[in-house]
Image (tube, rainbow, N blue to C red; front, side, top):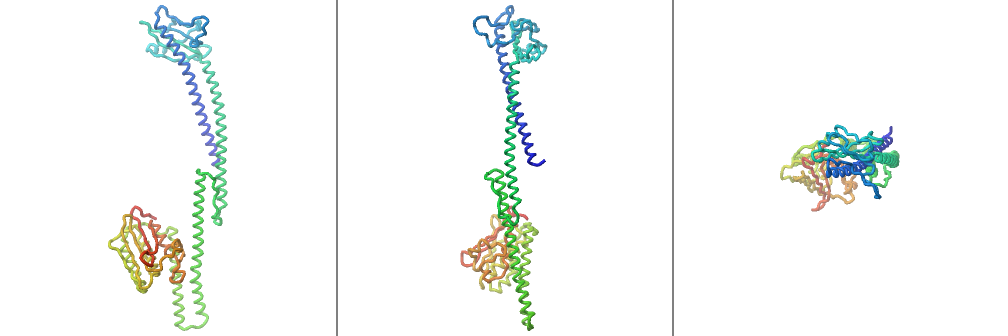
Length: 470
């Protein structure tokens, strides 16, 4: 059985249960109301007769019948059977409409009357019609009596039977109406879901730009469509990035390979001196080194994307780690006359992986040295904050062009200085840095310096509670 049929079946069962319970409750309330009205009428007549009996004498005990005359009959006594008994259950007096008959008196009734209790009984077989009887105890001097008043249940039963037919008819009509409404609403709901599913099946990797048609309502279905459209947008963005990444990687690898091939072909076409061969090999070696660096960066990004890099944060001394990174790059910086200056007045702890932090520092120092003007300085400032640790890297390069600001962290994107051939690189360094920092809940921002030319890169590492584990 399909989900739709199961839902319809559950809905129908729920409707049947609700309607049945409502009809039964309505009939029960009506029956209690009808029986309560009859009991109230019988009790009123019984208490009236008991009051009249208490005001008389034991020698003149009788049932007070309505007086004959031109006055209309008393509706209070109409069709009511009245009987007076003593403490032993013997009939002392009875109404004329009882004739030679008597109202039944049981031992349990006598016992309850002896304790002064007013008793209601239903007598299904006392006469041709079922009776409802109330027994009211009366004390007259030293003697105990009881007034028994009975009335026919036939009218009440007929009323309840008619009410049962009415409630049954209403229940059936309500059941059919609710079942039809439920079937229509369920059909519309599943029709909308089926249309959404059909649209989703038509969307493939070649048509990720399409979106599911919104039903026009802000209910759960509308929210589901919005969620699916948001997911499709993210998938489209991921596919576009993947396509661009593949195309850019192929282009970046093809260029040095083409140069390598050209160098080798030119070297093989004619005899060359040893010095010329050395120069050719030196040029080929530079291309191979660049290719090796690019492949390593691509592998690093692939491992980060696949979650293969361990991202367990640990408390590391950020200032000591920065000094170690500066020692590695001092030779490259000195070759261009660039000073590496560290401002770290105190030990600062950061929650990050040591290997990941070193990878970030190497990439940032590489960029700062490449872009800084000769005979300038690169400053590194470390400080502790309430929410973690901050590292700033400030260079004296050309700064960040406004057109490059939003694309700095995209893979294979190279800014204005790189495109003009001033520096080498594949445009993967900052993308790697951001991927690494994201894994630890750290942030990076790059802006132009306020005190002159150059770029200011600011990293913030979260504290112990905010650090995110991979």
